[in-house]
Image (cartoon, rainbow, N blue to C red; front, side, top):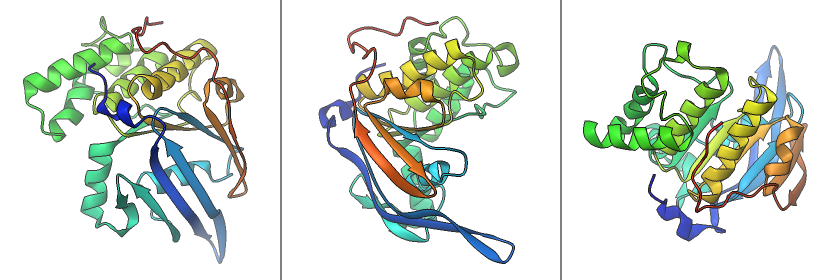
Length: 253
C-alpha cells in the first residue's frame, strides 16, 4: 500500500476533545459514564486507553468517532467541530477519515476476504478495478495474500481480525479506532494484531486509539491513558517495545 500522506503530519494532533460527558438512564437513575474528559491523539502514535470493564473507555471511543453523541463537550478533528455537524455529515466524516476494528470482527458471512474490503472502498468512490487492487494490497500487507478468496467461516480468529484491519487500513484513515481488538484471540494472534496496529501508526501515519483491558498490549504503546469511573487517572508517554521499521513489510504470522 502506498505511503499515507498523513505521514507528513506525524506528531501533530489528529483529534482533540474537551469536556466530554455522557450519562445513561437506568430505571429512574442516571449513570454518568464520562465525566468531563479531555483527550487528544497524535498522528503516528498508538494510544492505549486502558481501564476495567465499565470504566467509560468504549463510550469515549464512541464519542470521539461520531458514533455516540456526548451530553456535553466538543470533539475537533480535521478542523471540524464534529458534533456541530448534521448526522449525514458525521456519517461522511467516519467514511472519509475513520477506520474501525472491533472485538467481534464484524465481517459479512457471505463475502470473501477481498470483498469485505472492496465493499467499503466502493462507497469511497473507487472503481471496481481500483478497489480490487487496493484491497489485495491491504490484505497482502496483513499477511493474507493467500487467503483473498476465503470466507470468514474458512478463516481463523486471528485471520478474521486481520481482514478487519485490512478493511480499515485500505481507506488510509486519519483515525483508527480499535475496541478490544485482541479480546477474542489467543496470545500469539493478539501479538500479531497489536503489531499491525503499531504499523498503522508508524507506517501509515494514522492516530491509532486502542481501547483494551489486556495488559500485554501496554508495552507496544507510545502513550498509555488509564481511565476509571469516567475520569482519566493518568496519561503517560513511553517508548514502545519492538518499534516497527517503516521500510520493512509485514512478514505475516
